[in-house]
Structures are given as C-alpha cells and as structure tokens.
Image (cartoon, rainbow, N blue to C red):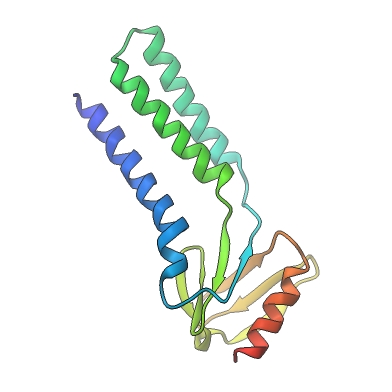
Length: 152
C-alpha cells in the first residue's frame, strides 16, 4: 500500500464520517427535531470539477496500468463525492433551543433581526454574521415563520 492509497483512504474516511454525521448524528443532537426544511443547493460547479478530476485520475491510473487498489479507492472517492454533492440534500434543522444551519448550531437568542428578501431568501442577522437561508420550496418560509413565532 502506497502513500497515495493511505491518503485516499483518509479522504474517503473523512467524507464518510461527514456523511454519517450529517445524516444520522446531527438530527439527534440537542434534543428532538421539531422542524426540518430542505434547502437549495449552492452551485454545482465545484462538485463537477471535483468528480471530473477524480475521473481523470481513474482514467490515468487505468491507462498506465496502475495499482488496482488505487483505482478502487479513487472510484470510492468519486462515489462519495457524488453522494455528498448530488444525492444528499442540505437541510435546516430546528430544535427547541436553536437550529442547525450548514452543520453549525445556532441558538435562537443569537438572532437579532429577520427579514425576507424579494427573491424569497430568509435573512437572519446574528451578532456578527448574516445567514442567507434559501429554501427549496417557497411555502416552507411560512412554516419557518410560524415555527419561530410559536417557539419564541
């Protein structure tokens, strides 16, 4: 096993740990989930570049008769990238005392101001940061509003 294979295993393990945390652990942290809303994905250009570069590496490894283990590890890395970038949907998860947005826990008392932009983006102003929440379905903005009013 070469250093390249060890680095690939490390990256695959990191992506797998992130996927498991995002899918199974985060919804169970900080109490039961009261509301979970699907968000819009950001640009997919980065993901296309990543998966494309891994595909080029796989092609290079196969055509130069590289180690078969490396080809399998690169394929696993491409599949993990495909899952994380295209299959997994980003979500905002509301709990009793706060919410998870972009895998970061934010307590409700940190929200200083909330606005709705003309293009349907919920803007939450925190102490030092502004959150731009783009929901997949525009009707979910009303659900978020009702939830925040009822639980505050």
